[in-house]
Image (cartoon, rainbow, N blue to C red; front, side, top):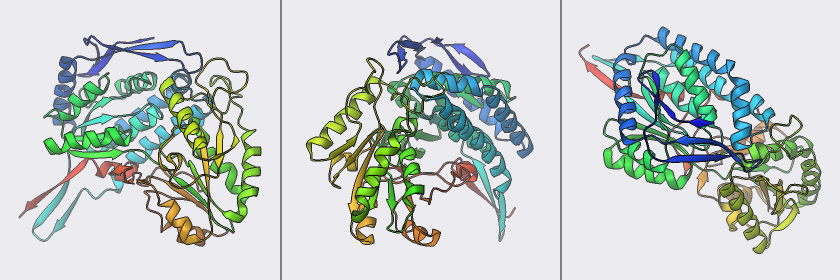
Amino acid sequence: MLYDRYYACGAFQPCTGSGQFSVQNPTTEEQESVVKACSDSDLDAAIDSAKTGFSLWSRASMEVRQQVLANLEAEIAKRSEAIAESLAREIGCPMWLGALMQVPMALKGIQFAREGLVELQWSEQIGNGLVQRVPVGVIAAITPWNFPLHQIVAKVAPAIAAGCSVVLKPSELAPGAALLFMEAVHASGLPAGVVNMVWGGPELGERLVSHPDIQQISFTGSTAVGKKIMVAAAEHLKRSTLELGGKSAAVILPDADLEAALPVVLRMSAVNSGQACVSQSRLLVPESMLPAVETKLVSLVKTWPIGDPLDPATRLGPVANARQHARVTSMIDGALAQGARLLTGGTGRPAGRTHGWFCPITILSNVKPDMEIAQEEVFGPVLVILTYRSETEAVSLANGTRYGLSGAVWAGTVESATAFARKMKTGQVVINGAAQNLATPFGGWGDSGMGRENGRFGIEECLSYRSLHGA
């Protein structure tokens, strides 16, 4: 597959850049597709298109915006199967996960953006002043490869709802979902210029965020890159929404139901091969419960068959690329060298696998809080267990990293779990395995970023205030 067209002025245009990116199938290690880079002139054309689109779309009625979002949701739903297959071939996401999580999350994101339009208070009278919420302008949206469709929707749908226009730079490592999204945009009835897309690597991203006609940046990715974007944004005084890394803790309190908790904890650490910013990669348990927790987790790993992501029986696919495979292996080796105890998994391919970037689910115990693997994001199917003796120590461990994106608490009652959750320095906490709620604000504290996405909160990120005195 050759991806050689960008999208601007309401049409697909030929990329004129000289570079290209190869996408390998993580199961076969063979080339799956090639992405041709955009040139500087292509980028300028996309930004000019977004400027024109904004001048029109910022005046669109709420009813028109809602209808376009409804159309976009329907067009993406038509492409669900093709999107799931592209995720399996390009990032190793099992078909079941694409069908049950990756695509539905995106559809929910559009639904909640549509509903957020009517939840927002767009204007209010304060004394002699009419306070209005108005769209920011042209937004640069830079999205990652791990949840490509969901992350695109999390940025583009609220921008559309707010009346903004977008220049999207999706990951060049997962182009299939991005192209299918843009085909849905093209069919949705959006005016030309409202949503535009360019292909490129870090260099194009740098030019995009520093361009004088970009008013706001929305980025999801690593903390290191997020800091560079923040520096560039500061130089040009651009607003930024940054959704960065995480090292989320799942806390088991002494009265928790292990039979209910541990299957969910394992799923939240292994789903998408652990390549999720909200991955619950640290498990905090009372010291007295450690033997029971270890035994149960090792048994549960057997319910996660590893294999070809196109096979319906596969629950765990490969990690997305060779670089990620090397990182996971290196971090496990480092933890073992520091004294961690291997319960299951480890480095190297699973038995019977001679190729593909497969990493078995790895569980490490005897992990100390100062170990790298307890502090830094692995982005692989690795769960580390830390023990505590008091609730005070558990709170300290939960808050003991530079990140604060997500977390979980399990307890005998919702009240006791909630009381603990209120002490956690993180953007969201899941209580006793509660269902995901994409209408609530999502974002991090500390090195996990700033700003919020989802629902009306995502729309608010794309708005500014204007006060009319005497109106």
